[in-house]
Image (spheres, rainbow, N blue to C red):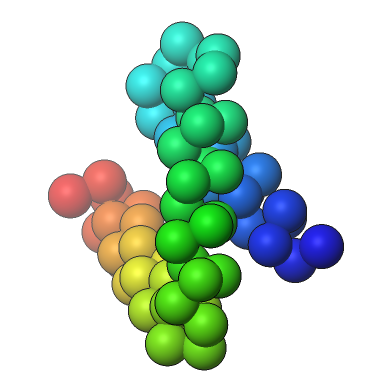
Length: 67
């Protein structure tokens, strides 16, 4: 179940980034969640670390006025 949530989250972020929506985000989310879960614990740690990095970068950008 967590695997499906990860795929849905990744797919929604991809669709939000390009602004068009559609099947591209769903396909990329599905592929990403399969790769992450097939890698096991290291894959989940890498994906979580990358997500944390992106979150911190976005938060820092907002705090500095979008710079």
